[in-house]
Image (cartoon, rainbow, N blue to C red; front, side):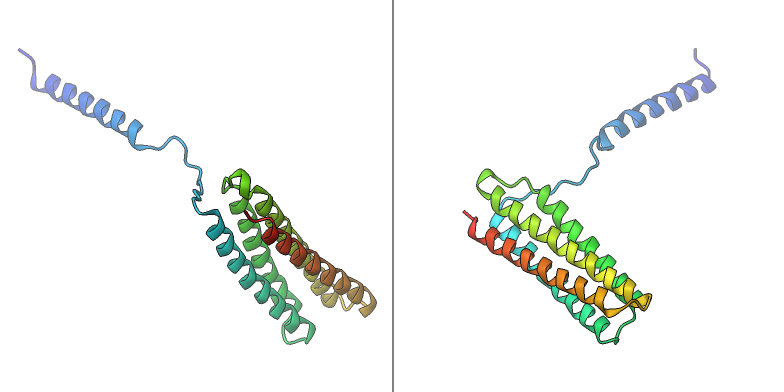
Amino acid sequence: MASKKGIGVTIAVLVGVVAASFLVYLIPEDTTMKIVVSDFEKYLDITKEKTTLESVSIDESFEKLMEKKMSPNEYIGIAKVSSSQINSLIIELTDSGATQEWVESYVNYINALKKLNEKITETVVVANLMNDDDNSNSINEIIAKIHQLETESLDLIKKSDNTRP
């Protein structure tokens, strides 16, 4: 006859083995986030709305910076957040798995977002120059480049719209 201690140890080992086997099934193997898109037109439209909000926000903040209603350091903080948001949108569009008919439109829009991010980077350069009290010639040259990047971004957005299926 088995002792009570032996039975207790056996039960404890069995419970441990059963619990461990359940954990193997409960813990997911692939923990990466995946975006599943079924309506590519709507997804691109939603992304465009988010982009418009970010673009308007950064333009208003840059205008306040230029009017000296906002400090360069405040602006730089806002610009970093906006740039991060734009990067997230680029990653989402890239990982959306667009079908062949939508790829060209998505690629054009991704390139437009990259130009927008370049524009934000240049506005940060202006803010840093303002922090350093640099001369206005350098700032004016960069502002011209900012307008060029904005134009290029808008052209790529139009190209994206024109290449929609």
